[in-house]
Image (cartoon, rainbow, N blue to C red; front, top):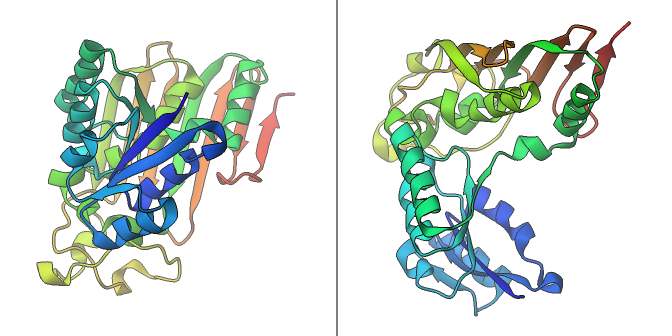
Length: 298
């Protein structure tokens, strides 16, 4: 059976959808929508002149499609997902689902009402490191889990999140949602339960102190770990009203206590989990495919 895929929000994360183009399996990317002509040109070059490219996602949805990847900025997820689901298309939706709970509820209701498949892209569940940690927990290597702690040091925070739409709350609803959703999802996945009580704190400790810029001088997100220290960087968004550090304390429905901390102005980049159970402790250092996992269970 041929599967025809369209991509809404075709740059950045949208390029990750390219792996889904597998002619040998009769799966094809046949359409892309993005406001940037240079991105659409890349799709023409890669997938041929028969690939529909358009700046209007509504035109894409008029094409003969079976599924859609939605990789647009977060504040557009609700609009784009609901439009695709209303047409009965299967939807891969990049996290987070939307920037409000009402938006998430609308997406879920639309999926149910039209019988359309919805898959939210929490990709960290499929990373080798976290699948191994989940396996060790499920095998009982630490006994009954009682505590999970996560710290995320984001040395590239200034580059990735304070140069474009991410830095404005009206577009992202904050980096605890936009970035932290990865780890908060994994915490609940490893724990096998969801939170019933939450306390959270956050502030903008560094980036709000940088000189404001005119809108026409807005920079673009890019990754360069040589950009240091944070206060010496330039090219930031003219509006910065999201936190650059957060702490979240969670009590889960199964009694597990969890914490999540993120900081966007560290000199190093590292994601660190500690899982403590009745018979041991599990901890990782980094999140790469070869990052070590330590287990103490004597």
